Length: 314
Image (cartoon, rainbow, N blue to C red; front, side, top):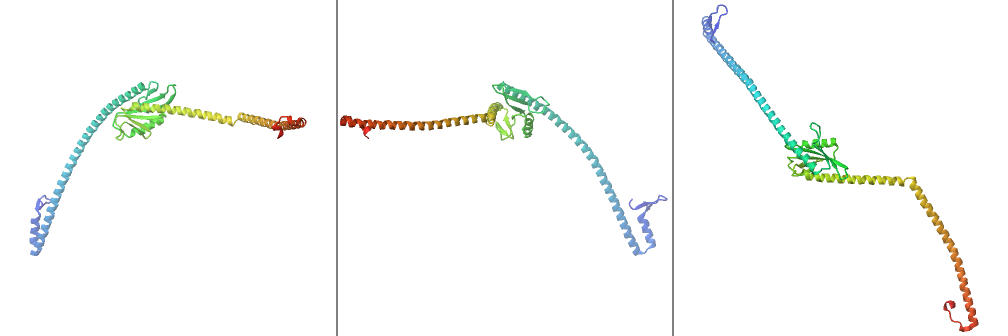
């Protein structure tokens, strides 16, 4: 088939090689016939190679088309399988989420009941579902019914996540609570019971009651210290206002004036007594002199018969 051609005019099948050979034999010499034969063989080889190449190309195209068809089917089947797996995972996630939510609500209920039982005077309120915030808000009230501070409580019954800390800190800022406690079943590896980390308390669900007692005790004491500090500040303010006021000035001026009067009186008395003592001393000297004179006169009259008085003879 590769060595024949069909005439376009009459449709006859012509053997190309035979015709060429016949023409060559008739029109050329032996050498030319050799060249023609070589050309014919070359042409035949090229035509055969071209035919084989076309055949291989057709086979390759068919193979690629077959692969594409199967690839599309494989992709379609793979997508269906992925959709089934995705739906299965979604169903599993919803089931686990429902279970975790139930477990979380159970832990939250236990937390609320224990806090109310341990601290009946405090106000323990639950944050409504759907409202941003922690699970519970504890308002600490002392024996005098004074609000000493607040603690927010968050309970988690799931695998530990560091995102819980930042979320609870934001809840604490929003609620303006003094303390924040995260009670969890699954603790970080480096915490055994409870610990203070990044501004909040992280506690095992087994130890939240003793931690609550300690935190509440500290809140009450801090409130008491703050109240004392407030009273001290108010007293210092009153004292400062008194010391810098006109009343204190008048008081001091009155004291100074009274002291001056007393000092003047003392000086006057000192001067008066000095004069009095001088006059009395002069009179005493006169009495002594007169006594000496009288004693001398008596001795002159009586001689040695008068008893000796040593103090008068000195």
